[in-house]
Image (cartoon, rainbow, N blue to C red; front, side, top):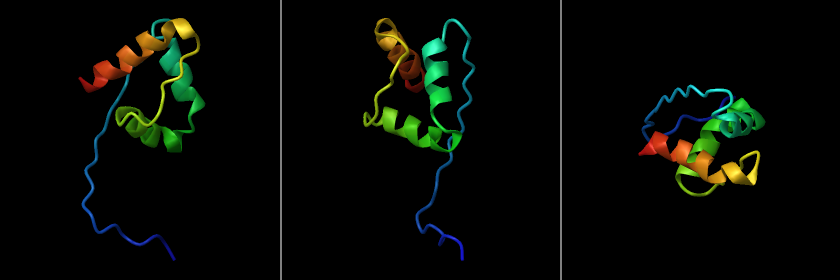
Length: 73
C-alpha cells in the first residue's frame, strides 16, 4: 500500500542552476555533499533561514550566501 494522497494543493517550482567551477566551488561542494533526494528540502530550509550554507573555507561564507541570495532576490 502506497502513501495516501495529499489533500492540500501542491505548487511545483523548478530551478536550474549553472555553477562555474572556480567561481562557484563552495556551492558546488555543498550541493555535492547533499544526497539528491534531500536537495530540495535543503534549499527550502536555507530560504526559510532554518539551515546554514556551509562553505569550504571561512573566507567564502559571505560570497556563498550572496550567490544563493541572488537566486531569490
